[in-house]
Length: 199
Image (tube, rainbow, N blue to C red):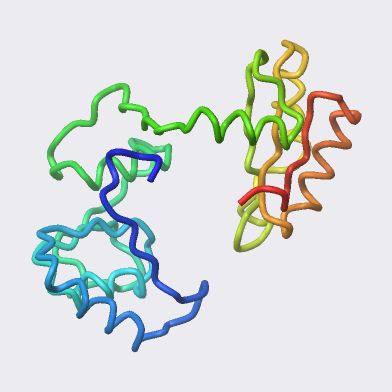
């Protein structure tokens, strides 16, 4: 709703690690009537490539991973040194295999409801006249994939010293790490721990 580039979001009701083969098959069958010509499969899991196959999408693009031969028919080999950032990796899947990415990728544009933004700032205690840095330090599938809290605190401190506000965002499950970051920032009045308070 907030990104004009996105026409439709399709949610698969399956938890992380859950095969849910029947649900994936039903969703794929429902999508057949939409006549999509390409699916860009971002996760490297075998499961993530099933719905596009079941939907009969003719071009199924993704990075090689988890034995997806036959599921993907436009399989790419990832050069992690050439594409160190996740955004570069995702953008590369949207390009042709031999197409060079632009040096600067276009930034997404969000459609903002000014009245809703004002109400949200008021509810969270955020100032309208001070720049805001939002940090999302959680790792949905475990802390091993998360940047250390001290690193987030160092980044937050850099902006707090420049008179910015810092909002620490996440679900209630992220409250421990956001509290640690807030503590590292010395309880700065412009550092807002909002874990579990947004939706």
